[in-house]
Length: 556
Image (cartoon, rainbow, N blue to C red; front, top):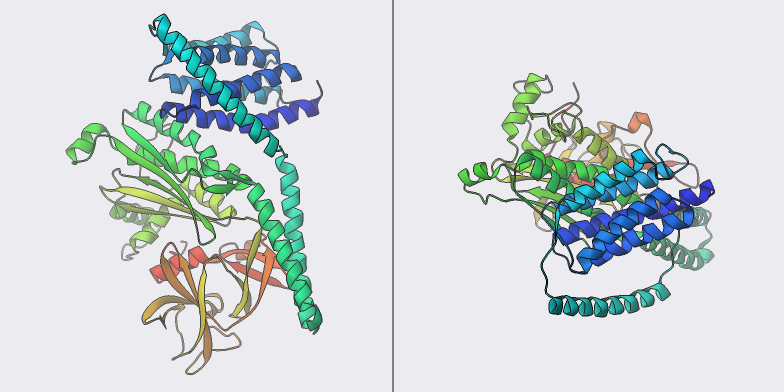
């Protein structure tokens, strides 16, 4: 069989493996239809393996399918340990598929003695967790009739779905998304050039084309969306494994499984989220006796919540465990020379220290954590997706890790503002209002307040932040006209003070140069049609900075 066919098979089965993981998690939770879904997945892999010439995988899939068939027919039952064994079988299938790829090609494709023994061990581990129930003939006939009726209904539903669905390779969707994004940017640049040249007669036509291009781009984005629940199955498995290993009791809850997320974003998000979930299970949840002594339910709770808000995706990993004591973080930071003994950073700044490489409060090294490696990688991974991650915690009550990400990674729509001699792009997603006000006195610090709707908002003077004095066109001083842009993030409002605001545009976001990589509140850059560069603001980070009233703790 050709290498291209094997690679295509391996690529297509990735989605099936993800679906199997979700089905196993649903099966453990008592989900109706989960066993049927798992059976269909392994049946599909078995048939495809036979077609592309992978006899070892085909034989293993057939043996596993036979066992699932017995459970469907009521001839066998899963025990409490079966779900871990099912996940081990899924991992075994994944390893067989990966080994068959020409780019890997490490393990045996055809069954040999050593390979067969490896396959049999995985199946034997599953067999050891299953039981055979006693069912009389009448009950068995009734169960088979119900199963047959359900299969017929499911088949009808699948036929209807097949008529309405078409499989499109993700690579093709990525190309279409890329082209449509380039069209949006090109049209935006063309419109700017036409306006600058005074071609007002084309304004209506250009606006119409821009609107159509934006609609095309949004439609392509929607085609790439998958439910968040499709990647969440592995998190439940991780919690169960850690709970079993540590002797704790943990209930895992998923909220917002239907929230849609871009497929490429989902693939890149799995590892950082998995690390945060493992941290919650390994370090957060106490053992039953400790929880009882603290007046808590002996069973801990880890909740994974996803929702869309203000054009962003917000994911929260919450636990009701021991929590994190900021005083312990501060003591560790002083000991490492990270902060001075007289410094008094607030809790939020102390929690940010946990994302530094090598910084760990755990004296115990486990299979999953405690080595001071991980949270820094989480922050870098989320940052590479133009996202933010932070931790909130109360000692004795639990902790929450909050991840915020843009819905689209490549394109941003916003308006240009000028401050401190820089052109800045402020995304529309978080913008609530924009108004002029008269400057009162020279600003010695970027941390300000501005009046809005009868109250004072925390504000950041971007001119002072990026130019240490705000020497933009509007200048500073009594009576100078400045512009405040009101942002909202997670229920908190903040104003950005700029010298002036200008046109709206769509731009493709590019990574920052090294010289700007550590600049606070900057998510990326964009090149306009005339070759000029604008810096794309990270509104979530700026809101957080303004709420704290200072920049991050300086590196030492």
